[in-house]
Amino acid sequence: MFKTALLTIVVLLVGGVTEAAEDSLTWKLGLAKIKITPTERMQLAGYASRVEPFEHVEHDLYAKVAVLEDSNGHRGVLITADLIAFFGELSDDICRRIEQQTGLKREQVLLNASHTHSGPKVSIERGATADQNETVRRYTTRLAEDIANGVAQAIEDLQPVRLEFTRGVVQFVMNRREFTAKGVILGVQPSGLADRSVPVLTARDGAGNPRLIVFGAACHNTTLTGDNLAVSGDYAGVAQQHIEKSLPGAQAMFILGCGGDANPYPRGTLELVHRHGQELGDEVLRLVAGNGKSLSGPLRTVYGTVDLPLRKVSTRDEAEKLAKSQVSYERYVGEALLARLDQGEPLASHYTAPLAVWQWGDQLTLAAISGETVVDYVPLVEKTLGPLNLWVAGYSNDVFGYLPSARVLAEGGYETRGLIRGGVGQFDPAAQDAIVKKIGELAKQAGRAD
Ligand SMILES: [Zn+2]
Image (tube, rainbow, N blue to C red):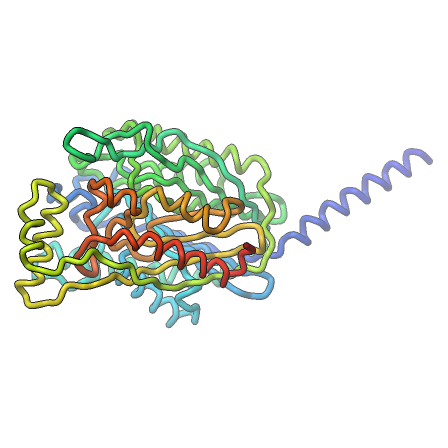
């Protein structure tokens, strides 16, 4: 009698657990993974002084797609890649293709590349007639086609999952704005602010097995330096590989945070790439082995643009003064401004930058800022939205150049050099408030509670 009663209780418990697990599978997830290792010899991106094509492939590169669908059928598409950046015109091209093939709108798509400095150059801009430009354009066009096809494929693959979010930490993220008697240089600043958090979003199937692990770090993928001629995803590539090897059947995707002014520390060798990648991968695996906070729907995906004011250079004299500066990044801006003026083109007053917010129920907000976002935007966004249930990413949807804060602009240094693409000019300190205000508006629109 006693035994039977016990058995009944056990059966009820097991039944209850199974039912609860199935009840929580309120999300659907579809995945695609595309190998994007260049097959033609190409220049690597990230270090201007390095002009030779790569010599060998150390690590394969991938673009990855996750399509997430909530119980209302709303879909969000996350696209990540072991590449230097998704520049604005490339993101727009990819999103146009996705919309043509699947009907998904721009605001449903979020692109974030790892900023590896050991991947190929990418550009769809029609350059001069040089062979190298043609190779880059051919590679990038193929990339855009493959990613759009990957999204269509991921939609075919939609399967029930549950979602969890949690956060860990890594130690190799180092502020790189070193103060010297000659001003701020690219170096090592151990007392400087750095975001060492590791956000982790996990999707599990009904049996609890991870199918997708999206994780972040706020640090340049520059463990390998300007003398490197090997293709590699740097620490983020190694971390993804490590996670996928340890959890067969799971796809790992990396989102770069506000690491505009952070480098890995120490850096310079392949051995260090493995060390940092292993540290990050192990931390993610540790977190995935535990339980995160469960995420309910709905998923809201909001996208908008903001006009960021550029510093006013009103006269040719001012541009010439910049072009003669002792400071290389001021010279860079001055020369670019002069070239514009020589061509009779007006100087731009602002740059229109995209911002995106994804909101999961009332449990998590992902604020995705464009540009090479410096770390100050983490506390700034935390202050505006409140620090809880928040993931602040940089380098999303359009990397037009560095996005400095007002503090960084006042201090000077490499991150103040302004637009690299889509125009010429340095940001005005008021750009900071414009970003933060717009993020606040988008978060509200996405349903984040005050
Ligand atoms: Zn950079």
